[in-house]
Image (cartoon, rainbow over all chains, first blue to last red; front, side, top):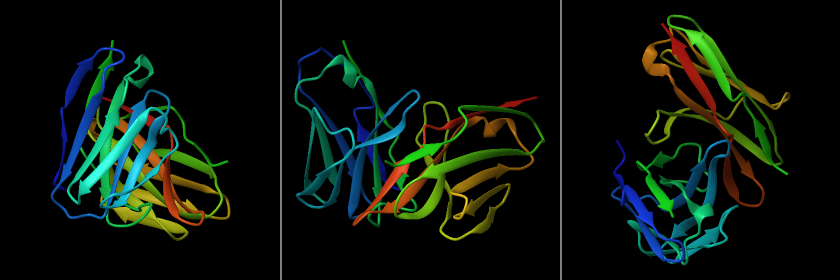
Length: 113
Length: 111
């Protein structure tokens, strides 16, 4: 299995609070992605990174920011959590841009109350 | 815009064969991938089709027809453990590569 871990695995937070999710990989893959998964929507791309300090927006980036200071770590921050951000968040890594094959972390279930 | 369509649910009997279809409307189509996801788990890669035709991996096969903007995942000798969600994903080149996922098909395998 690809070495990719997400933390925390579960989190409950209050509306308006900042939240940071962490993705750590040991595969040295250049590309890292954050997705959210909601019923009926599949996986939707929030942000992605193509190298250290190189990031770009996905299709549902509003309300989220990311940072990548090291190859192995990709952080997703909700600056002020809202109930609409209650979701399951997945980190993924790939060797190539876009990807034919990606490896996913186990997910973080975030509940905003 | 870019869109993918796949059935929301499919039910089949253990030991049978089931086909999950995926149709897409995209520009810059590059290839089609399939992922499996069990409840509470992570999506895992199953197969990729970059060219027309059938790709076989054990009990699973995947097919692509670029001219029809259509692909399918074929699962043979169904087992209870195949009950999961299956996502098609298209890779497109629109001046940069990106991957778009379908909404997923929930497969229920009955005894």
